Length: 191
Image 1 (cartoon, rainbow, N blue to C red):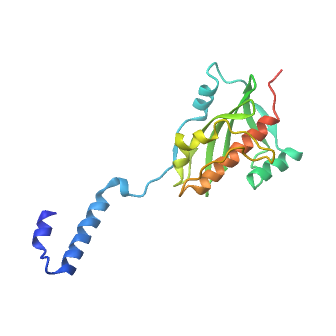
Image 2 (tube, one colour):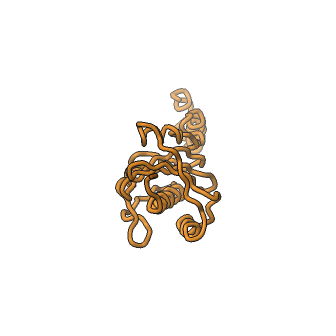
């Protein structure tokens, strides 16, 4: 860069500006962190999430069927029809684990949610398939859901801060948190 600066006279501002622009452009294109980033990734497998949630081994999975009032409420929470006839979950000693998917902008986000006594104990982004908005996976965001429960209107009893540039991902995760809490309220420990 010193050779370019030395060869450009400060008396010719246009030539200097053009040269500086070319050098800056060449420098930026060589920096890998400025290339388009893809947020897609598996941050934790569903199996690993269940192993951490139930260290002594996950209980046998059970299901909630999507029919009648349950189907209507799930559709109201998500704002669209749920794509399956049933939702699988794992439950033991008043605690349940849910692995749920919701579309962010155009791709599914897989979230693991652990509910204990009607409150979220932990929420983890397991698989993120969108090209942006993956900031929702960071602990600073997911910790906001800890101890969240349903309020009297069926929403979360705590406010969740949004993330600039990840609005649709935030919205999807909030819907899944509400969904897990609602579904947990319908379940009980196996006899």
